Image (cartoon, rainbow, N blue to C red; front, side):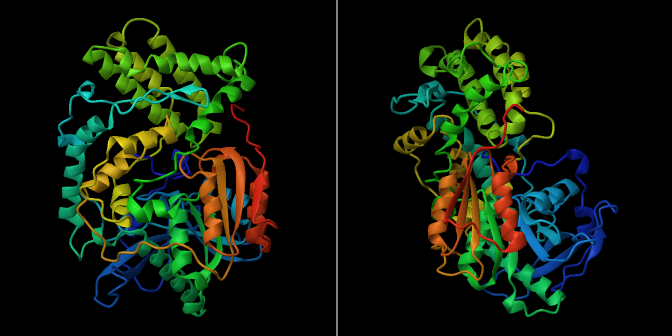
Length: 548
């Protein structure tokens, strides 16, 4: 399952369900605020009514969007409001507005004096009509691994940045494995949400970007300001940058202060739902930095530490992965065992590139434990409980990256119709050439959309960009971001005239995964003092200590 790109990991102790309140509120075209969440937080909630179909706004069909507001501090000058989207697609925004998130935004991004708002995108969370397809995988019959009957693809060098990552189960088997679930999910969503007056055809990003404008207009009316002249201040992270780039293209005169952090390549969405994505281009190089970081940390902080050098740690890792090369084995049982371990390893290592500062210590324990499990016997003889226990060490409590099926409800209507597309071996060879670790990370996303039945009511495929926005946009990217590589931020500056980019020499997803004061200082100056970096592209050196 592909990773939903939400850079904020919440403290479970702060999660405060607000949907029970939203269910009691009636959607209005003007904002009516009610206390919500933990009463000591002082947050407000509202339900805003907007058109279901912006191409036919007067047909009586409506969507109600839940909105939460953390009011600005009372002891500082008031500066305004800023809307946020923390990523996705398919993720609700209102649950993320908790004290730790609000504090982080004020400390790292906007400074004091701002109302911080977020919303559940249409069809997601507590918005109405619901996008719930009432789908469960419980009734899907799993397909037994018959991967040894298929070729994995052309033989290629399995070394990238000195790291060995053999090819895993071939794409033909992955397609066979995914077919029952993908077809069942597509059918369920078409049945529950696919009609014109239901939410399914209206969940694409162009509609969400227009929702952003309508929320801004409602906030302007609330303050007695001309709604058509509203300047929307916005923080978009990861998929939130897709929303932001669409908005800035369609409504450039309404662009206020726009920080787009962890920048997506908009052509990834508008062309074919990740089919030609370049998001994994820096994944292998990012992972290669685990070894020097582990060596610098030493044995007390890195459980996979090896005497000698970073190369010695890398070689120890390569000894593990070289044993996961399916071409070394003859029996179906052995091949099935290595396919499973390698697939899980890829997912674990890829996911933990999102926040290596916090998660790489757990990865080191996982690798050390897995090495012990694999020390003796053939793959089919490995104790699966021990393998599972080793994998369990890789994720700390509270660090789970969610993967809701709703990601496909947005992604599959954003791109052009790819139903019936044949994913051939040549395409998967290209994926493997781009990233040995991330080879199959986009496969399920693309495959789900090949089976998707719903098409959008408002079809919009760009091009993305603007000759002039009312306020220059600030793009931010980590050089070694596993989901939104820094190259995408550089590309975006060419599409939006007057914009600036800050590239952090960091590993992780979005600037929130780092401690980069250089980047945060530039961001706060943009929001607090209207000061853009002097250069079109500003580069900040690495400051984040891994294994600290």
